[in-house]
Length: 360
Image (cartoon, rainbow, N blue to C red; front, side):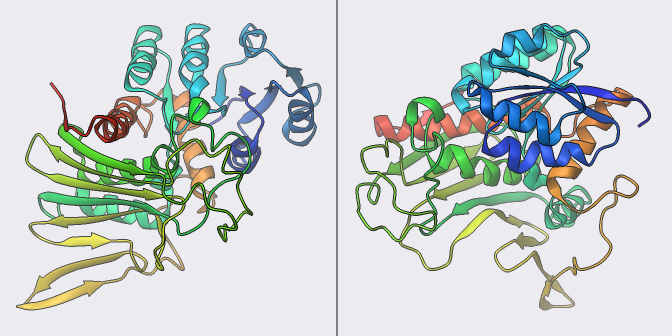
């Protein structure tokens, strides 16, 4: 990568400050030149901390998009606005990194894909869990056929009592749901990606709000306000794929379990299996004996970019800007993220109707 890419940040809240902007700050080929937030103070602080000298501040994202010198934007807003901001940005000639999940609904996510195809601009979705060392190792094993045909997977994102009480996380209108669409989306993306299977046939699911009305809940981030808690506290789905494979989806912010696990996958193939339950473990039979392989991630690893760190957010950003600068295909394809949204929506729909959801 040789040239500079001028970048605009739309949404300067928690995910922008915690992930996107710190990662971009480490990439020499990137200049953050514009910051937009409906709360002007947040945009000003972001510009001061992460922007180049003279970086501009906006409260209307459409004004930011009018700047023709901006080549790429990061959409870091609540889920409700992912689709229309991303589509407007693509139509304005910008490449887009949109934070996960892709959108609240399948229809919105599909419109995003169509806009990317129509404009020829690059669109990717922020599933940084793919860039963890364990994920990259397991993906390579899957691609090399070490697990064989993967016919069962578990997408696991289970917290015991770790409900995010800030921002709009508890607001169904803004977010589209709770833990399923927030962290379950990471686990499902990992599982589908490892299986390389994006053709769901049927989904059945249940969602629960059993703990959201409790007081003194022992939450990691302090007590929540039950009146503001308008989403589920746990959700579970069962997915049948067209090729006969099955996937279970498990997500919670608050659930009475003693062994929480977040953003991991569990895979069973006809040659071997793998899980991330206690670090990455591959299990197989060799010379008539059951074996478990536990890779060491303390040193070495998959170095995609010279001098890069092992930070997943930075690796994700570097891969995207490598695609932008060198006109390569993005690693996390919008068509893949579209299927994640399709399945999540179907779990919510099945829970609402009490019926399975079948896909054409």
